[in-house]
Image (cartoon, rainbow, N blue to C red; front, side):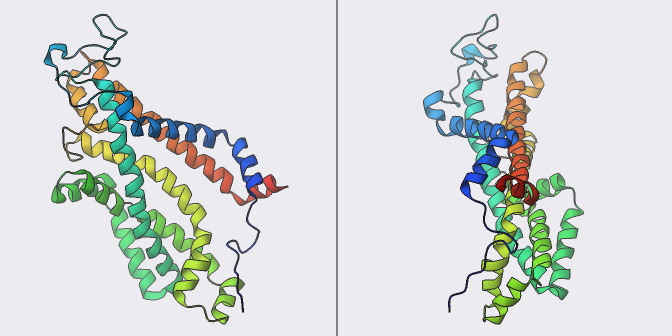
Length: 300
């Protein structure tokens, strides 16, 4: 006997044409996607766009941007105290920020989504224990917890990703838990039980697909948060080890010369601002697209 449970318990899956129509109506999602694609393309094709970010030339130390008096067009954003090209460092630093943002969100989802599924579906003592653990983690300031973990593990790209991932699982767990609590008593779940589906199949095939929409929205917004946290850790000297360029590290190097050589810090700050803004715009746009009321309007 064939058995098929729809992903949504109340409506059919939206048609591709309707989704494209809604996407064209969401300027936030379009702008955010454009910004993220631009940053990602710049990071991926960095070797073809600029030179070696680690190359030092003390003869051009603290050279201003190319358009300023005393500048050189070979260094459009100037050079740092060691004569390294600021544009090259800025572009290569985007690689670190994007990798940390994306991979740490995956780590957080891998931890938080199963916790939310088990907590909401099993309930009882398991739910109480898991949610109390979430409350305990939320009682600590996130940056303080991250600083403590990185200080214990040591600064490195891998440790930064692990730290941000394991300190960010709570939102995913709570969102998935609330979705499971609202759906586990629905008729389609009871029907799955009646035909002999086990707990694992019910969780993965019938409940989890209904939680992906809010999880994707939160994950998109959390990418921006992860980028800010990585920049903060690098700024404090607990992020990726030098000489690997990071936006936070560039900010830390430039703070001493902020009044004499503003080009050391301002471009990195703008890069963080623009990237996080693009991520947030995409997240808000996705929330608009996935909102059930707006979906119904788009399908009419």
